[in-house]
Image 1: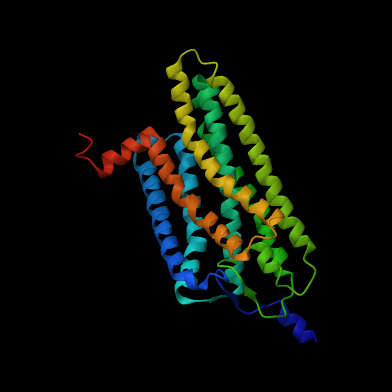
Image 2: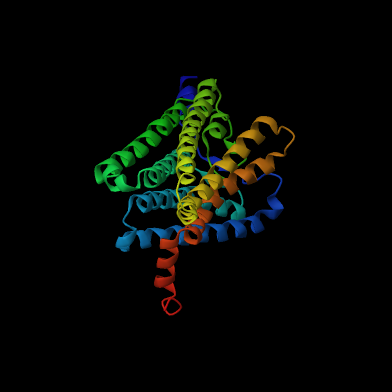
Length: 315
């Protein structure tokens, strides 16, 4: 009995099934996700390259944008390659340590994205409400502190999930009807009480994201008030344009998250396959759309892309 208990804390490989009920469409879903994955890697890679080599983009706003692009690349590489192997090759095994690693980087990337969007909202607030003091407020030291706070906060709220899973005994076949490992999905396979996992896995991230949303909302309330107090229409239009791309990215990130929470809470009649497909789209689509939105809506980046990749057309 002692041997059984000991071995139960060291589970063998887990099996990821994909999207149950949609197996006949896995190949086509995989093609769609592969295209989205390539767009995400290419778009965020281009953003990181331009921001690193163009001195005119060495500003706080673009530094935070490069953090968002790097985090989106991590998120895409954490989940999509494994999902593609499942869609094209069938159910796949994943070791328990690899599952914990994937789970950590998945949730860590979401926490980082939320914190970075808050930092970008603060950047826009300072730029529009205190334009003459922008460079004195957002100094290199302040930006470094913001980055350290963003990274450390995300790490501190997600890392405990690893230990909350490692403490659980697993004594049955570990089959996950999903394409990736996430905290509650793995915890539900345990042969023990998981109320701590449920409460922590729900309350802490929700409270964190909710606080970020509230602070972002306050920032944009102050920003809009400052914009509509500007004397000229051109000045108001220019200020609104500088915030447009950020607002689009906020909607791209938070709207699917809110939809996912509401469907899990109230959508009991919605098929599981729809929940899993929506969760996969939530992982894949924002990293692909973010660089497109910034490339289209941000004049500096749009001009640099044209100059870098279409030099003849820019003359």
